[in-house]
Image 1 (cartoon, rainbow, N blue to C red):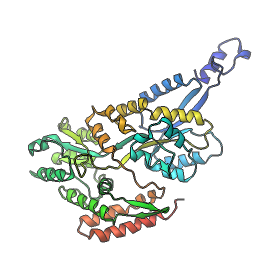
Image 2 (image 1 turned 60 degrees about the horizontal axis):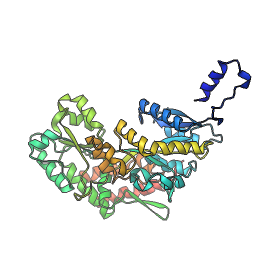
Image 3 (image 1 turned 60 degrees about the vertical axis):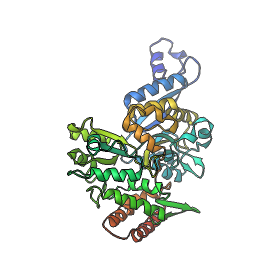
Length: 419
């Protein structure tokens, strides 16, 4: 029973003087304010969660407030810096945003809680790693989404390809076979740097590395150059523009035109494709981005959200209870099924096995990564030298020379503290 209900009940009696705003158990209820992002969870899911949480935590009420992504960084930072605990007690943040909030010193250390019984060993690395700084866990993984290969089953069959390729080399061979009859074997834009990142990670490389507290761009390492070379070979098997990313033009629209066999995208793009071309309904399939060997899929960039608790909360125990429930097996599984997400733990992947696109995402997410865990990475993306590097290589420039230039620009951007 909420405090407002109790107040109304008091006003309906003649015993106003003896009425107290406490439930029958004698414990005053406290309110935990939760900021969640728009469209992260359905209204129906949140209603069911709230009802069950308040039923099983008889001293807590939930006040869930939906936030817009636009301008959320400044709004969260303001809440974390507030002197009074009037703001949120739990906040959903993008997994790659956690480092900038950690850097400001406004997040509660959740290491002990996550080590206790929250299953940290099974967390998806692409969600867990950005939420951690020097072995201290601030962000708790909530849900993930990542790229898979969306493909035309009918075109695969016509080309005599029995099923999804299991390795990178099989992928190249299949794509070359598909690249005939007026069709593009794959549509891969030249500046799709998220997809490139996965190939670099598969080779053992990184976009940047930290040594002694100093970040350095590492696109010029042999491993990273091998990743770029594979990207070049794959991209050449289609007609994607070398000087644009996957949103210019939107690749779902290009696929919907009916002359593309594959794209690398989140599974949700399939709905956009079918909306634009209903004739493709039932013809689309999904498989994880292939890896170097058949025993595991390729690495992918993992997007998604973590839950954090502001250090200035005055509802610490209640906030931790909310995080524990939302990220626990029951509600995390239900969220994944409801919203077609990847659950936060590899051990929960079976919960989405019946949905082909989500199952493909989950397989890739087990080997997923995130961008370098430093708040200054935002400056890299703001004037992204990786995109320019990719275009230069795809138009014939020397890869090693261009990689050194791009790495220097990354190093320079990471050396300048934000704010």
